[in-house]
Structures are given as C-alpha cells and as structure tokens.
Image 1 (cartoon, rainbow, N blue to C red):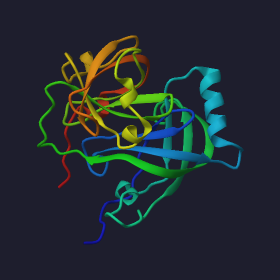
Image 2 (tube, rainbow, N blue to C red):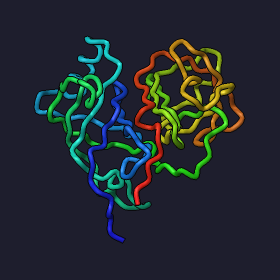
Image 3 (cartoon, one colour):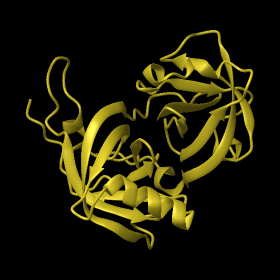
Length: 239
C-alpha cells in the first residue's frame, strides 16, 4: 500500500550536549500519535551547530530547547528490516524555549542528520495505562535521560536528566543498552503527572524491556527539562 500519511510539522524537544537527541512532541491524533526518540547530529552554515546550541544552553541556563522541522512523515524515519529508511535528514529551526510559545530562534536553518532511531512506537488507545510510572531511558556516555512512556489520554510528556547512584547497579545502563531505549518501571509511583520524577528525587527502577530482568537500579534525578500535559489531555481520533 502507498504511504498515505500526510506530511506535518513534528515539533521536537532537544536534549543532550555531547550527543544530541530529539523527542517528538506527540499528541493523540494522527499523524502525531507517535512516541519517537532520535539520536542526531546537527549541521549549520553558521558554524559548528552542536557547539553553538550547547554554548547557548550553558550561557542562558534555559531548560527547554525545541526544533520546528520542515513538514515530513515520521514513518519515513523507519524502514522494514534490511532496508534503508526513506528519510535520514531534514531541516528546521532550533529554538531556545518552546517554538509555539514565544521561543527564540537560534539556528535557522539547521540540518538534522538522523544517526539512530532509538524508539518509534505508535500510540494505541486500546493499550492499558501502566499500573506504575514508566519511562524510557536514552543517552550515551555520561549523559543519561528518561522520557515518560506515553500511553493514553490524559497523559503527559516529560524528560529529565538522571545519574546512577553510587553503589547501585547503574553500570548496566551501558551505551549498548541505552541505544535501544529500554523501558523502565519506577517503583512506588503511579503513572500520573503528580507522581512524575522531580529534581533531587532518588528512585528505584527496574527494566521492563531492553535490559536485564531482576535488577534494581537506583537513580537520582538531576534536572527536569520538559513537561507537557495539555497536548496529551484528550484522545482525538481521525476518521
């Protein structure tokens, strides 16, 4: 069947410094009903795009950075086994702040080269809400992030930086494990916004997929970068 998904502007949250990640700002309506985390590199005629972004982030201390890309199909980023994806790069504008809520353009245009699709999953309104708070883990080297596992409305998008607590089993969160975006369960927390991870929290987490079973990890939350509830408050079905 031909791809009938319309092209759209798929806003992205920008995370990471040494390695840059983009997380799709999903909604419960087509064609935005997708949770998608990408490992990317940035290019710009203005110079070293990653360094310009990192310098801006460090200078201003701003938490939220977003990307407003040219219209494209999210499904073009993934391909059947053994094939190449239809899309491996796209252009857009990088904003300090939220691009739809008064953000400031800092790189326009910027070219995004996709190095890896860490996670790509379509929302299914028949999926049950987890009984406990779930996040997916991503990152590389010393940078470790958690993004809330989105299921059904009302829900929330949330990204934090974390670190392994010394003496725990944090060494299992290797680059090889993180490249697949493992799903983690946060012990003792319900899956709702008020129970989300907060700065300075220390929590016990367990792998639900993508990592060794039966191992408890202890993680400390260092910084909250993004939290959104309004865009995921309602289920909207296309007909």
